[in-house]
Image (cartoon, rainbow, N blue to C red; front, side):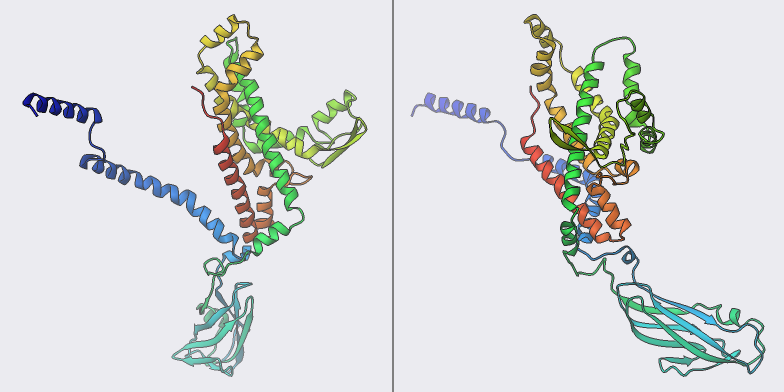
Length: 443
């Protein structure tokens, strides 16, 4: 091979190596930068784990434990001392009574004992209970095991060595020291699925599930539709637009207890404004209990229909209260869309509805999908709105209200946690389906 051919091959090889770019893999500097970035982000990751993962793991843990509200307090031995005497003279006898109790209604205590200081120079004890001994001015009693909520009483006869004006203050001045070891249902490793069986076997569970889904789907859809209409209305420039934009935010920024009370007052069947207007217009014959009536029966074309009055009312409240959030996001997205394509479509003879359908909706699909995801999760987890309006009565009981009733109303923390796990499973399933089939932003 000639020298010119070798030089040509070398040039070609150099060109190929330059075309391939730098060698793959991170260099020492990039690795150091990556380690520094991870170190700086580590506190954030730790905080997120503590705030998000720790309560989630705790909820799963409690859901498989037979935990009642009283079990949140660990079992302990309590001792109370009572002296049945006031002023005594030397040689008088009186009774000292100790009451030992297991504070836990469900967990037993083992190795229970207590000790109490006794002024030996002032009183002399006649101990007849073989569980107790006296040594160096200290009364010690060993009781062994105590069953849940068990009580033991020990009575000791005492004789005064001198005149004592206030024997109660003398003997009850020192608190007995109690000991005893017992398990804690929250920290032991005994698990059960009775909470989930109790939840799923309940006759009203599936009805509550369907009410939760209906409330969430229709409330979310209503908030999006109202927000879309409001954004379309206030996207055009006109006098007073800024004032109306601020006014539309009122339902969202107002305190929930204030707006809920306002709705309860307006919809009251006896003194509510809405019923008064409908009666004067003769649209109804008798007042409607919008928040207390489960169904309204009527016939449409000969078909009997049961209309859920209270559930529809709380759905309307949900859509009205939270449409401003959708309105803000949709309006911001609409104002970022260029006007050129609308002008071209108008020149081609497209109607406003066609422009909205074929131009606006594809551009808004991604933001509408994100809003639906967020509002679905938030609405499904809603508790305060329904609780303030109806308390979960009249067919408006949702899973979140069920969590409250199980955990607080029935004092069954484990069952409440089990319902919360069901809520988490429903939302996780919905999120996975959403991310798989949700529309993507168009370029």
